[in-house]
Length: 117
Picture: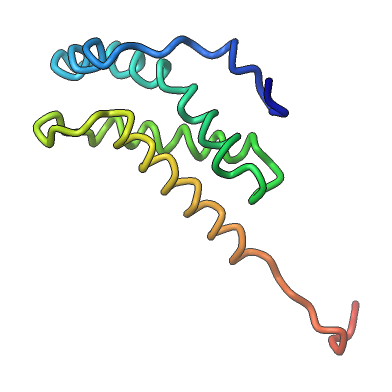
């Protein structure tokens, strides 16, 4: 199916839009965890499809994507009339992109004229 780092079939199933709205309307820690777990497939999909060629360590990207998903759950506003998966996808992508930018800043380039120690 995918040339991937984890088995998508092992991730929890996604929940319906109606159930997601219900969980946000009755938001507590248990419902928060359920929303996060049910959207892990979205994170995996983004990492495998969107960032396929950009970064070699997919597990790091998955972890950053989960951070973006958690941020999305904590800041989602039902009154904005936006589907949660659309909002979460953008948060996941932004977190991964920021991580890649931070990693690029850590790369040091050396000149051939520098002395090696």
